[in-house]
Image (cartoon, rainbow, N blue to C red; front, side, top):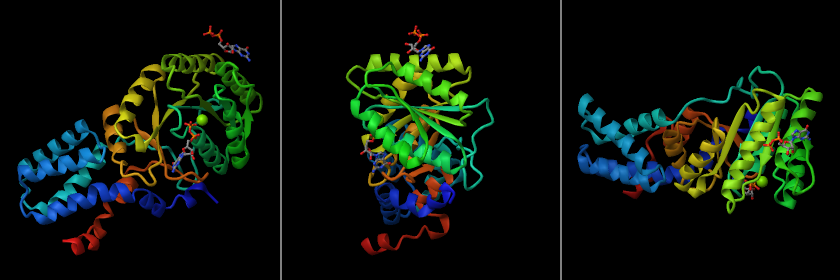
Length: 328
Ligand code: GDP
Ligand code: GDP
Ligand code: MG
């Protein structure tokens, strides 16, 4: 079974339920209570976006765009607003999707192995994401090797080992306290010797020694590029959607240190703060590559902007929402 088979749209829709309730239903409610688009209505929508963790800057930018379009294109009817909002939210999401053939991930044709380094603060879901990614690449037909470069916590190796087993891929580790850069070095060297397609490097995320962490991550990157000039090909920052706006601060810090190529937003299941995806994507100008919608191995989805907007707003044909009618 291709991994995308299990990544049904319904899973995404279910994951975004609370965010949808938080943004779309509230907007629908006030739009329906009003007939005409006016300044007050746009302010109210901006407020909804901000409280849904889209972020003040991005919310303002979205409403500015809508205000402009209302003016230049002469929209008057409040019922037009849902469509405008949907279009603008879509336009604000950086779109640089992971390549797939509809069923499998396609690894770019580079000199092997394709190296993906996973970074982020503690508890955001890095190790889980490494496990899920390993599964996705493996079921897409690639040979995968995981590097356990979080040597800071003794339990980290064991946790990653369990994920490697589940995904059916190899893992390189050293004893706790070892130099993470050395683990990355070993992993890459071993991957080249075994002709592995994809290397995934898990890293530590301790917060209390943040500057050391950044130095450690830079060193991991530097050491890998010595053996493979293009490595790492991807540096993915994992962000926990439930942390809301703090995520943008984290993204800036990590980007400065290790130049992020993409974001993974986890824990979108069960949070009303999914709007943070829109804000981060816009403010960081960094594409969201994957989203996590659960704790299981197949709960990582390739981020698809159109599917995300559809899951959030409903597809255009089914926009009428009966439950809102009933509430009024
Ligand atoms: P790390 O410290 O960044 O490596 O984070 P872990 O991978 O150890 O994950 C921390 C916790 O978050 C674990 O309990 C995971 O099961 C959970 N987790 C990770 N991704 C998701 C997700 O997409 N949804 C949910 N609900 N939980 C997640
Ligand atoms: P620096 O510490 O920033 O000066 O970078 P180095 O080039 O000295 O290497 C950084 C780390 O990469 C070292 O501490 C080692 O852990 C690892 N490393 C470098 N070369 C090798 C090697 O040949 N074998 C292994 N296993 N690790 C290496
Ligand atoms: Mg971890």
